[in-house]
Image (tube, rainbow, N blue to C red; front, side, top):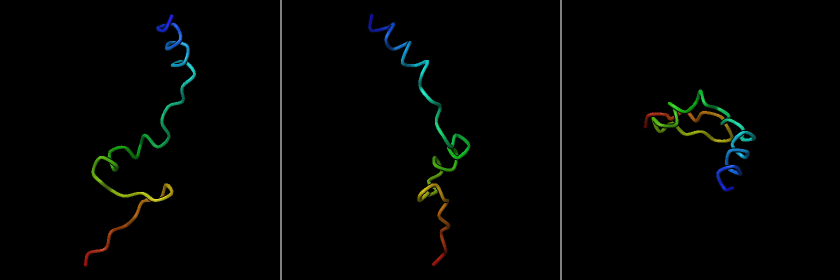
Length: 42
């Protein structure tokens, strides 16, 4: 029964927004409110 419930829930899940940004997030680039933050050299 639990398996059936999980399969039903999975069919209704949304995919992640911003999948195209995932490599940038892995690199450690910061985002604030969905906007990429530019880092300036000091």
